[in-house]
Image 1 (cartoon, rainbow, N blue to C red):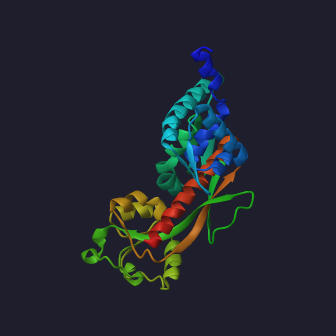
Image 2: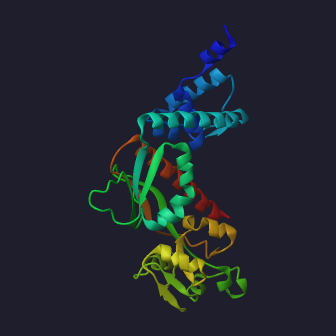
Image 3: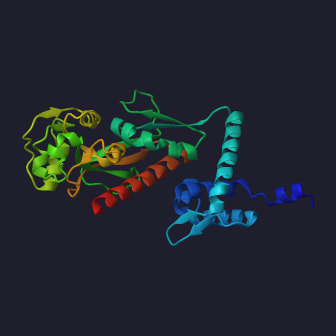
Length: 306
């Protein structure tokens, strides 16, 4: 047989490339199956079919996880390029891209979604994302709504799915601490200028309750009506704010601000995804949210154990 015809005969079906790319991107056959509306067994069979066609092992499989091999990493580059070309062609033929309208709180959008959203876009290059952080006007379409609910996190109920727990922590610029103190007690935190993100001091009161102290600030206080404003004031050096550490990860890692009293674990509420218009893209976005939320949770556990 002519070499060209032999190579064509060995080319796998497109769905095996899609299954491989999803599994590689999500690091899980189960998550890939959920995104593609397949069973994990079906995804596994497609990946094995691809491996047989390539005569190469693409994943190292363990009990609960998969990891790309060297061959897998090389092939993923080509698979991504090929799928991007196919999706580009589909958009050119159809004349329009898929759209996903997302309504979400301002701080979550700016501090959590924007730094991460390119990960989702790389896996779904044919999707136009439209974010709305203010009240929707009558007639505006919302496909996925992200809701924040105070109090203990609630289990998924079929209408909403939890993806991020809102754990709060006092943070401030290091120069606010006397002589750069390494050890800070909950009581001493209240001697610093306090930045509130609500008039009722909800986040501060919940954190003080977890710390076993009364919320009675001893220093100056500034009161804002959004956590975004409070975080910005903190980054500007105006005082100590309560913030979800997942929202200020880059500043913490850079040492711009410090997490005070990390042994105190206080939960304010949680963020939930509500799908108003069901579609493959909306379902994929919710799966991605939950995957990113699991990563943030793992980071929280690691920080508390360190």
